[in-house]
Image (cartoon, rainbow, N blue to C red):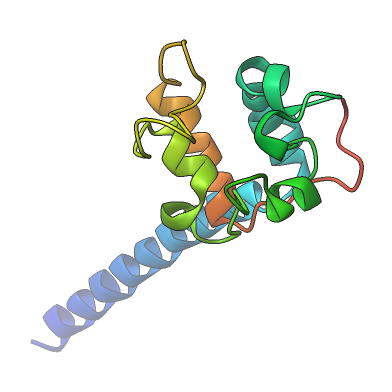
Length: 139
């Protein structure tokens, strides 16, 4: 009987250890999105390919520049497009999901297919992790 209880204790400890390791893996994934490199390597290429034409460089359609965090926090005519930590209420995320109003601001990017689910998930993950960007993102 003692032997069986000891085995059950080891199994329980082993299962708890697996749970802790799984939690550590999830935390590591969340931490990755909170690093400026995540923005530079994963998010910025999505924005460059789909958004910079209208909201980058000298183009600030709708009064919005998305090249800097300050620009997204300031926002454009519709107000801030970024609420760090809150993708559900960030206009940027709602628009790329095509969940906004039909017009002004219209779903983004306009006149193009919706971003892939993977690209949307990457942007959501970045926003949820705090929307961390390098001080001077590469243009």
